[in-house]
Image (cartoon, rainbow, N blue to C red; front, side):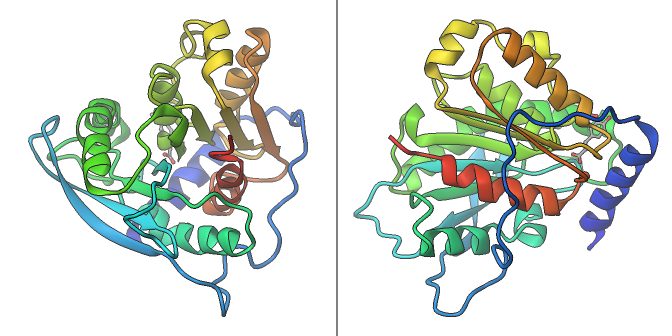
Length: 282
Ligand code: FER
């Protein structure tokens, strides 16, 4: 509850303080159908478990949640989506406010999803930093997550679960701070991630001009780059700048601007619904 209040507060402050320029996306993506985030009777359900892994980066055990789909079997091999939270959250934020398991279970039941494992990390890689700390104290911990993810969490997941451990089977996406992390880490490690999503990305996003070193190579390697934001989100400018840069550098991407949407889980649940369906097709 407290995290939800913080996220709502951050959203409200952002709405109130930063002017928004009206802009529409290159393509209209229809909103999810009613009930996409509601448990349905007769639908097989996946599991959302809590795991701990040893982080050499932080020097302690750290927690993550892991979604395994219905009919999960160690005899199969699954692609993996790493899905990151925002400034007020941790490994529980998506589970608490975004019902990712319900959205994914429903998509699977409708045969709109490649069965995948989804890892929900704690993107604040520090011993003593909490969601209550001010942004300047939290930001370095969100930046340090790059090493934790690449050196500790991904190796743990690949040792522990039956997963396909190649870039074409690895996706990275997140909301707000997690969107910034996904763009920063993903676009500088295209050898590790072929599918990248930034949902309502925050000011931790590198300046657009610094996000992509080699546009030709990025265009060749990316299987999906998804940028989204509500046009009533105080952080809209960040996604607009990324989109403009990507157009200028001719890097193909999906740009989803949602008219009227703000900085909240209604937006991010819809993002997960759209983004997940695009993943892991040959
Ligand atoms: C900021 C405003 C918002 C910022 C981060 C955020 C790094 C993050 C918001 C969120 O995660 O919801 O100035 O600076």
